[in-house]
Figure 1 (cartoon, one colour):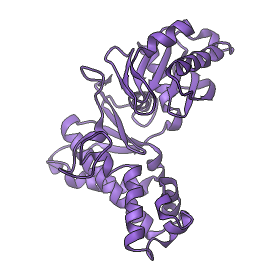
Figure 2: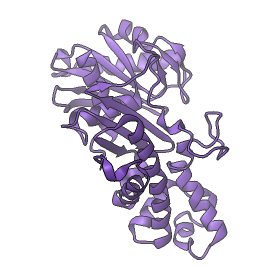
Figure 3: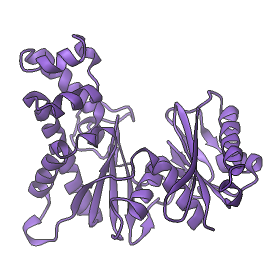
Figure 4: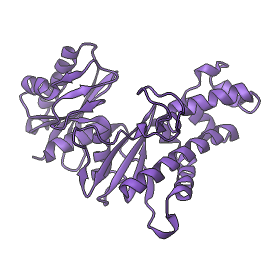
Length: 316
């Protein structure tokens, strides 16, 4: 099975592509995500059908769908999705009937982690954890060459590890979750607080937001930090500290050889990764007496979900 189709379904777009055994996307397309569940099923199937009509697409043998949500242990049903009205939805069956191909469904962070393990920053290692730093914090875990999904398919929700007892409220209903301190949302919150506390220091950030400090978002903070602004760099340094502390905790439990950092916030590069590496080293239990993992930037970018889902369908 050389060619498969990968589909990455998000809240606003459905991206799909024909992927070969080396992780290369040979054909691709992108369409808006409809609102209704049935329309989403139809749009995924239509995207698959369009790809099947291409020269390479005629050879595809299976479809992998990356979905943002809880996917059951059989990789067939989306139990819950935060941005789409999927509730115990048999997505594999619904798409498979329309597309006429075998379909597997995988959590999008797991699919991205698999892509990094197979073709990206984790290639060459059998034990890789991926931390995706976006609006929240997501993750995926590969140990001994196997994607870790857990008994019910919901493993690696690492953004909801509790790092601060009675800390900031999280959308999951708990408090003190890691993503409340190490995510794009946390970065924007810290920038807002800085602008209130010290408008002079935050002047470039405020200017980037057009004077509206409640409009500060990660891309603005990244742009200001990359220009060399000390305050913005300091915000990423603090974010990196939280990231590194969490990675140290993951290392104590999983002992991976590589942790891959992806997501939009990580596009700032070493301004985030170097503080993370320092904090990881400082907080790793018994760090002077054990090998240290490598913290690497992700390489697969926005294509990770497509490539990972397609490769998982191939291996399945």
